[in-house]
Length: 204
Image (cartoon, rainbow, N blue to C red; front, side, top):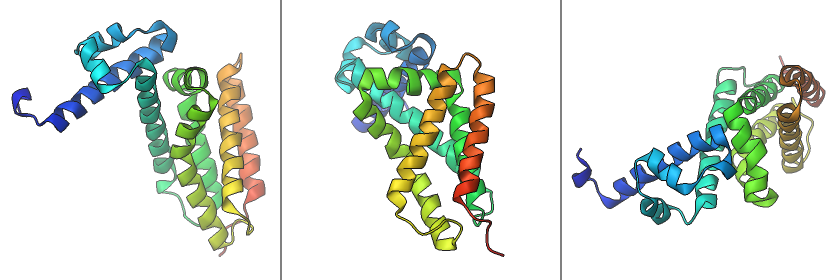
């Protein structure tokens, strides 16, 4: 389909995809502070005017990038648990946590999500975006575990936030470590202990 035949919503969606893709690459490589809107627009093949037509400013574009990255991480977590035994709640929680930590160990994701995210957007907005994409999956696993009897009956929401917070802190620990490989192994062992302590073996 030629550009001239696109509908306005299609043109808007294409522009947003181009801008978010360009900004994601640049923010991951150079960091938020070092990237200007002119460079983003050029990388996207658009004008600065087109950028500001779609996003109020660079901050809002960064928020859109973070949304996309968090959605990608959530997809990776979902894929990691998709083929596992649904009755083995401990293995499901551990696989989801491992997928999250592995994603956050990648320099591009690490910079956007863990290093720039809180400082650029502020803690509250950064946290809201991150939780929106991770809480649903973890809450579903915990609820299912309680229903199956592999997790002791308890309120799901507080437990979900404790587990998500623990994995977030693990990711930050790895990101700030002098030896990320060692830190990843250490945190993997800690998360495994948490998942084991929380869950019972699946019923026969």
